[in-house]
Image 1 (cartoon, rainbow, N blue to C red):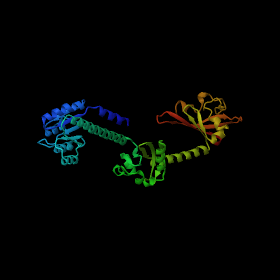
Image 2 (spheres, helix red, strand yellow; image 1 turned 60 degrees about the vertical axis):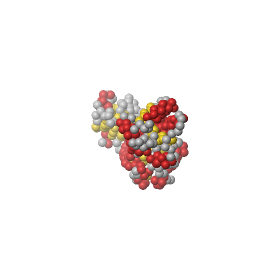
Image 3 (tube, one colour; image 1 turned 60 degrees about the horizontal axis):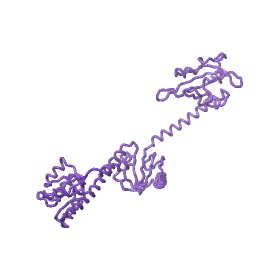
Image 4 (cartoon, rainbow, N blue to C red; image 1 turned 120 degrees about the vertical axis):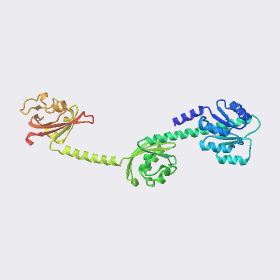
Length: 389
């Protein structure tokens, strides 16, 4: 909206460029002088031959308004209007003529003239003409600004990766981008001006209607996922309300949801494997802190999971020995190579004295896990009692 207003203000500050065509040289000289009094910032161009005027419009002259006489010899005002409309369909064209008949006025209106003004005696007629020029040019520039704004908005929404449609405050479609047409399986031409509830009756009394109406009533944006049966599609929707209507961004997440469901099931399976494993399993972060331990690890170490996850693998709180029962030196810790060299270890033996004073020999295997940047992310550790191996 700010861009639109800025564009409108810029257009209003630009001098009006006028082309006055009349085959009477004295008339165009007078017109230039008097119009300049009422439109001091205007650029006024004149021609006495409409054919030459057409050529100039095709080559070196750009104007915001044309003022034309009717009876000009080689080409009358209506013929000139037709020639201009063939080149510039929306350019303001004022027929300023001494021939004041209802027939001419009717023909001019039918031909698409913007305004019609009959010449009169005295200079006051130019005040009226100046006012008419300002009015038609103001409207013309506003329409140009609106059209330019709509083109820019259309370009923006065609470039967004999500599908998009806009509704007015009567729930009628005002825009839908190409991706939206494809996802909804409808063309913009058949949707514009139509009610979303009429075009998609299955959305009535659904989550879509509930969310859209609530967004409009509260003027708060909403985000939700909902399945639309007729299209056999699960949509992720972001809807943004305003006093003028609703802007809706949406995308097909059917395949994505299927993958999420599969991942969730796989995660549940892995969780069960982790907890039900006959081997003690622990997860360590890149710095060696223990973040998780399964039930079997709790049984082997004879301490709670909370106590386990409050330590690092090389904490002095562990009563570790080598396989002969001698105190384990730091440089001989079986997990040290995993953190120093990021290499796996397998079947390394060590002794452990539990809080109850029981000493047992264990076997440990561990493997590093790297992130997408090949940085160490975590380490998986498996521990077994040697007597059970």
